[in-house]
Length: 239
Image 1 (cartoon, rainbow, N blue to C red):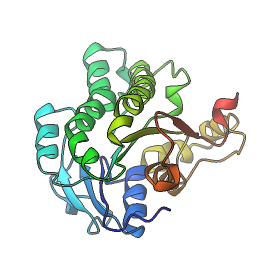
Image 2: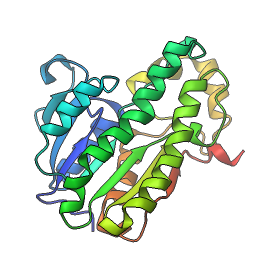
Image 3: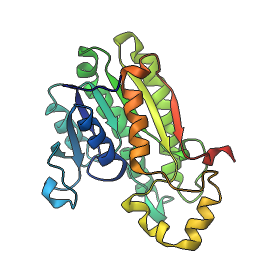
């Protein structure tokens, strides 16, 4: 039931980490996959992106988002994965606004623009990538926390609003995941140990473990699931 043969899939932020693992998983399931990234060319990345169509898009720029959507001709699955943390100055207003723009407003914009394509086929699906911050406070990251919490509400509203059009929307909320972005944390044994003490399974997830859940929610195996969030965190939010 996770056969995506000839299905058209767009994974934003698919050039690395969870997005790249997800794009590869869809290709392995038979899908035709387009990814976005911020660099000019797929050759600007260390990883081989030749299995995908590539479109450069800065998610903070409405005009670039519009151009991205104008270039998509068919779509069955939209994975809104692109996102960012604002870094150490998220309390500063311009940084706060940019983070919310990328993590939440861009998701709404792309989803609405691409909804006609998603509803044109049989059983279109949107999977938004949230975070444990959708449920927990990250006190040093107010913009990230607010945007991911907002994404939870947006997903519920999308699932409710689009059910009559045959389009499902769900959210995956990862915990700590081993990616290039977390490499520094994993190399800091003291910090890594502190974080892992909050995770009952005592390890970070691999990107492929998040990707498999994304494929499930996009597949016919989840045909009666919409407006829901699935936490994939090794038990982090249990405490």
